[in-house]
Length: 101
Image (cartoon, helix red, strand yellow):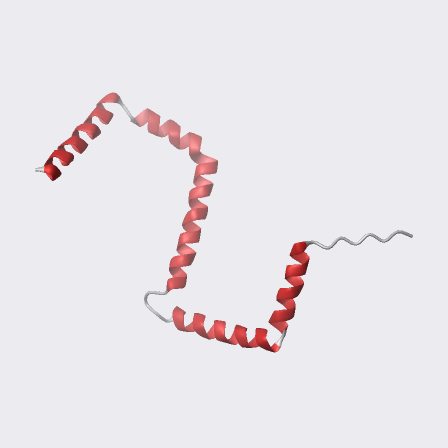
């Protein structure tokens, strides 16, 4: 009988995390983290909200780029007439001149 055991790094990491979280140190860390998160959650400018919003924005941008890139490009190309592009360039030029003088 041949016994083949495969141990993946992810499995080792999972076991270590579980062991630490169940230990006395892990329980203390859990208590401290929950306390800190609770304090942050009560603040008006909660930094956790900003982190979550940033991650959600990244995911949304990635999905939009991956799923809708061609559609967006097509719509933009249809809207970009030569007159429109010239108008934008003219306005940018005017702003540049205004800012210099």
